Length: 378
Image (cartoon, rainbow, N blue to C red; front, side, top):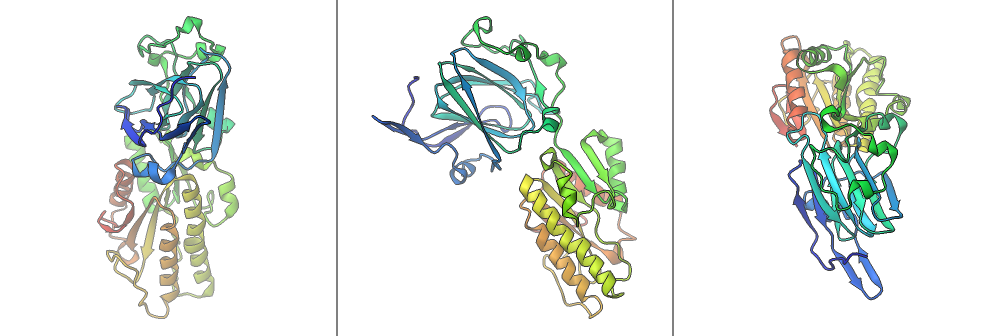
């Protein structure tokens, strides 16, 4: 067994690849063996490790020294550590559009050192000892659908220049890993997809128009309200939330007779309040950024609080919109954009669409915004 560095302070170091972070772990040892906190959410997130939404724990047991696996870029974040033995690890940025695409980082992992690997960074390792146990936490369940999105690069690619401690000619490597493409032929891993609900609305159409002009539609799914009913729990069973990085909800109720009777009030409550509860719960479960348009009639949209001082006919709508925003705020990574229904005919849907896309692209602080993009409250 490799010597383990005991009693180190928990610390995190950058690697030169965005999001890839080396973690020195505090391992406590004596004559009986050792103990460590392998994943400690509060301490690690305080040091800059993302808040990994762990849903699966995988272990790779490597019988012989020289077993070599990779290089695989997978569509999930992972926290990699070693339970027994040691490995030489090599990671390659294979993310589409990344400033460090093709960059390589290498280091040795043992029970006292782990690494956080973001989605799309290729992962590989070589066992340096017999009986090495390599373990990793991931934030998405394995599925055949997600496997289709893997990206691979060859362990022996001279462009990568990885100096394997054990020559690959002497290593134990699967046939599949021997035949991965070289970097020049790799198809980079695309970002997570964006789902737009309410594509038939004015803002939904504007977003689609901008996306068609600026990027590829392959990263977006556009669904109208009939194809994705946010009020129906069965809707969420039909999609894999781990494939999405953002959901834009443009399906705010279109009831025209806002004071027109119980049927309309019921429809508004179901579509805006209860639908938002289901949508926010789904996004929170999968760590999805949620963008919602909040359409008010008798209030100032630039207010940073909800005013329910409405006349009797509009009180049910005001309560519904308040509940809608409260529900959305239950998703930690949310954007609420407040619009004034009376001004919608004068509002530029194109401008609102540009604001939404810029929020997601440039990672604005989460919170509530006016239609012009002014932050009203976190």
